Amino acid sequence: MIRLAILCLVIAGVCALLGFGGAASAFAGIAKVLFVIALIAFLVLLAVGLFAGKKVKDALD
Image 1: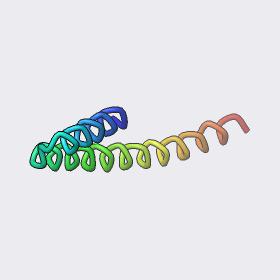
Image 2 (image 1 turned 180 degrees about the vertical axis):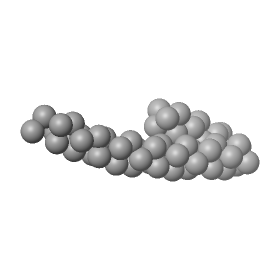
Image 3 (image 1 turned 180 degrees about the horizontal axis):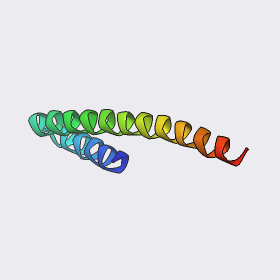
């Protein structure tokens, strides 16, 4: 997901350099959305991992 966000950001930069402002703006918006989705997924999986880790640790004790 982060790779797609970075790819869209690079494409936006190339479009901006070539003068395609509309396309650059669209790709930058897509990159922002993908980054936010990846950040939310990371935080959710981090929380799930922390809670699952505690359950496994308690089961071993």
